[in-house]
Image (spheres, rainbow, N blue to C red):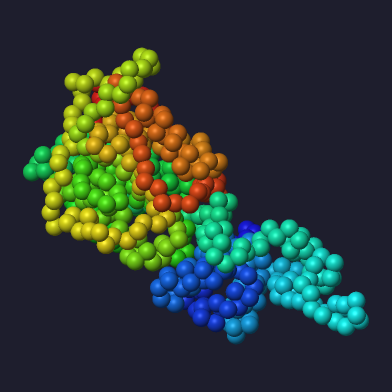
Amino acid sequence: MEGWARARLQRGRARLVQELRVDPLWDLLLRQQVFTRDMIEEIQQAGTRRDQARQLVVDLQTRGKRAFPAFLWCLRESGQDELAAWLSEGLEQRELLRPVDIIRPVEVPSPSGQSEPQARTSENLPSQVPAENVKLQEGKQDATPPQGSAEGRPRRNSETAYLLRSDPCGYCLIINNVNFSTASGLQPRLGSDVDCARLERRFRALHFEVLSRRDLAAQDIVRELQNLARRDHSLLDCCLVVLLSHGCQTSHIQFPGGIYGTDGRGLAVEKIVSYFNGTNCPSLRGKPKLFFIQACGGEEKDPGFQVDTDPPGDHLHENASESDATPFQVGDLDQVDAMASLPTPSDILVSYSTFPGFVSWRSKLTGSWYVETLDEVLEEYAGSEDLLDILLRVANTVSAKGTFKQMPGCFNFLQPWKLEGLVHTHTPLGIAVSSPASHSENC
């Protein structure tokens, strides 16, 4: 779908979700070959009428150049003329030609002199059909694959997945735990404020609305996550959650690890992610939900393999290191995180600062290795590389640091995508980047 058409749908998404009658559209959309029957059934499984309307608007944006005029025609055919007129207001007539003209048969003379219907080709299309539509018909660039084929089932393709065009792009919640209660036995996370400031500036530059919260107990973290999940994300294209805290290991099915509130009570990552699944947060269905976690994955220190000497100034003295990872304490807040009935994750990526079971290093003056590197790589590559390629660059850079090693990793349930369309300007960080070894610690 072209940019102007996608922009129309995104600007009109709130009204479409509120007013669109979806039931009369299904057969019409099938006739126009906008969706296959499998795709329509998948949209119908989104839930209520509003949920189906929301998912329909999202999926329309992945269906090629003919999808928008076909959708307008379907609206008129189903008696929703007011919505059709509102969406098409100000557009040129050539952009709004009825797509039915492209696929209906026409009468052409047969050798016997009688007329018989034939599918239209570039030779018998009416003259008012734009040449671009003729090319689409001949080259079948936007043709819908046969029902049941592997190509017909995905809602997105590698070029159109997760196009982020709304402004703001979405909410970014940063939970920054620095100081912990004496009873928790956890040390202050000096340097975490530097991480928080970096990420606030970076994600604002990427057109996210940033919400920062500092020093939250476990129940307060839950409350903030639930409040974010309950917001209406219909007009937004993405959601980010950043967790900066002490961490630990925990039992899990899909996503390992947990983080601590300032009261020393643990929250499983798996439970945190579940607040944003399709059931609990329907307005984020089909949209990327990203979680970045700077926390220990356990107590192990990774000495790595024997390699060449690290560059000067990048050594980490063991006597300056402290382990703040403790065994995960099961309590009321985390008992349901390992239930087998957890929904299958979709459109979710969880990026960890370290491999499960190992510590994550942080400088008291310049912040954590992971966040510092993530910020730098996003600044350079956010508009040109796939997110997984960006995270691979982060992992390669972080893993080369220090005497003790750290390897970031991620659990990915996303389609391929880029952060293109977001980066208009880059906000300078203005933060010192020196990393004295004597000030480094883990988590």
